[in-house]
Length: 132
Image (cartoon, rainbow, N blue to C red; front, side, top):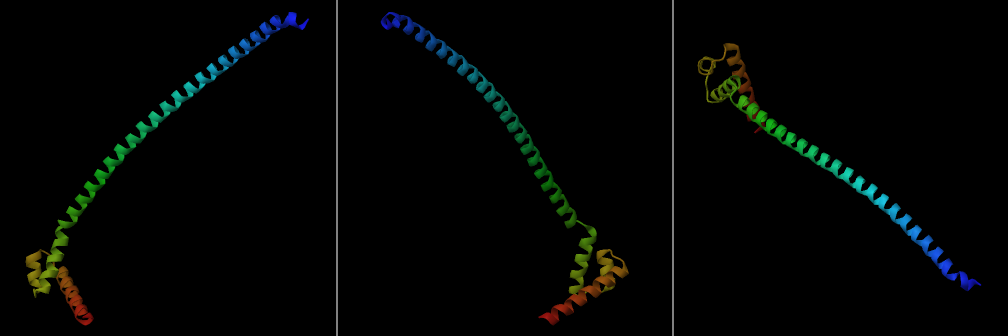
C-alpha cells in the first residue's frame, strides 16, 4: 500500500524541498542586498573621512609654512633690531678699548646706556680673566 503512495509522497517531498530552497534563496537575496547597501554606506563614509583628512593635511601644511615664515620673519627682526645691533657693537667696541664718548658717537646710544655697556663689558672681562 505504501508503494502506491510513494510517487505522491515523492512529489510532496520534492515540492516541500523546492519551496524551502526558494525561501532560502529569497532570504539570502535579502541579506545580500542589505550587505550591499551596508558596504555602499561604509564606502561613502570612508570617502568622506579620506576627503576630510586630505583637507586637514592641506591645512596642516599651510600652517607649517606660515609658522616657518613667521619664524624667519622673527629671526630677521631680531637680527636687524637696531637696539640689539647697537649694544652688540658697543660691547665689541668696549672690548677693543673704546670709551663712553666713542660709544655714544659710534652706536647712537645715550650716555647712561654707554656707561652701562662699558661697566658690564668690563665686569664680564674681569670675570673671564678670573675664571681662566
